[in-house]
Amino acid sequence: MSSPVSSIPNLGPASAEAFARSGITTAEEIRELGADEAYRRLLVTGVRPHFIGYYVLVMGLQGRPWNDCKGEEKKALRKRFDTLCAGFNRSDAKLKADIEATLSFLGVIPRS
Image 1 (cartoon, rainbow, N blue to C red):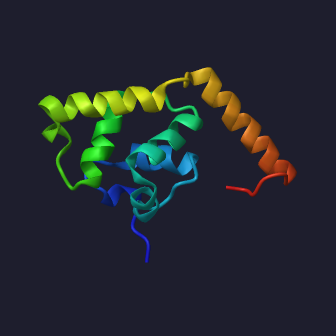
Image 2 (cartoon, one colour):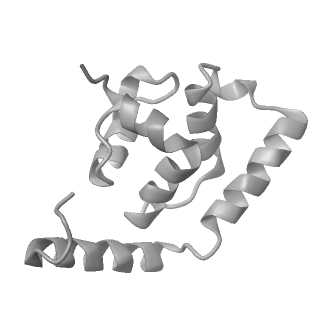
């Protein structure tokens, strides 16, 4: 049985919708991918990078409240976030998502 994305602490309906647009529909998929890859997939679909959204996801996967991220841990997560987001801007991500959707429609790559 699969669990909804919103079963991960800190994630609600808006997060579930964003993940669904990236092809991720269950909490198990997010856990399997890990925070960095799951967030990268959001970026690919055109989600605007937002540090708080990233660390909310990281904290949720650890079963911690979103505002538990502080000090050195938060600084380290900021570095991970910046590395993850390097090279992404909204137009690049949108272009890639459009190309993938077209290739999927044409049957060149599997439908997501």
